Amino acid sequence: MTLEVLPSVPHYIPAPPTNEKLPWADLGVVDLSKAATAEGRAELAATARDALHNIGFFYVINHGLSQEKRDRIFDIADIPFSQVSDPEKREYEGKIIETGSYQGYKPRRFWHINGGVQDEVEAYSINRDVSKKQHPDALRPYLPEIDEFSRHNHSVLHTILTLLAIGLELPEDAFMKQHGSNVIGESDVRFMKYYPRTAVEEEKAQQVWLKGHTDIGSITILWSQPVSALQILSPDGQWRWIRHIDNALVVNAGDCMEFLSGGFYKATIHRVFQPPVDQRDCTRLGAFYFAFPDENVKLLAASESPVLERVGIQRRFEDENAPTVETYRKARTATYGKTALKQNEGDNTEEEVVSGVLVKHYN
Image (cartoon, rainbow, N blue to C red; front, side, top):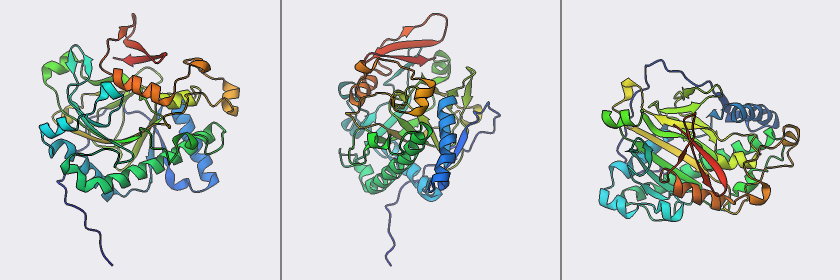
């Protein structure tokens, strides 16, 4: 028997979890070990349905990736930032505004946050088909593992989509068909690294690292990490923190899922805030899977859903004006953090119109 010898990788040491008592969000937990049976899927579907309808986030546990592999993925996730020179990063920088795609590097200080302050987030995005583009030299030995990680996320995605379809009393494969396994589209693995800011910039930006927003795609899978910074806007209007659970996933819906579900599954408003005092000087490394339906899917509500027939469809545009995934994705990606927003009087929201859709941002 031949044991697989993996390339060595520098170990990224994250900060320990915070000891501060924060107002944590109370999220449901979906245990995927129960998804093998119809009875188990029905139970999980109810949890996922209620979570995305009422709160917008839930945890996933027992998803099939070991703690050891999860930890190694985070070691690999740091390579694009710590093991690649700045000149090589520029060589692989994504043409975000021109293409409406995040593939490649997103450099630091690219988005405007608030008060003239730019972001301190560096990101590297890899298409679900890892061979679609070239990658920096330091990352190439790990592409087989990234490919395996991408496939694992897509498998988890299909299970989640199955549960959400059941929740709307649709055929189990209703949403899966719109995320075809043989159509690559724009779904991607994304590694992101947040760097601490100066005290002056924190004050100007009111401690906001990414202002409140909704994701563009259908489902976002965030691999839980210990630096507390992610907050969700709760139904009572309060911002609450997402607690770290080791080797758990944090799942939320984006705009595309809100449109496809007729507003039943809400695109979750969330932001990234300055970490608590005991983590304030630490970098925050994240691993994500941002899922999109196939590019040619029109963002029409599943009007055949018995649930939507009972509760009604909440529309943000008329059916005849529904954009395709590609049109909406490109427009929102190209404008995010780069366009002047209209400030609404009387609240802390700003807005813009993207492909005929009103999009709000929350300070």
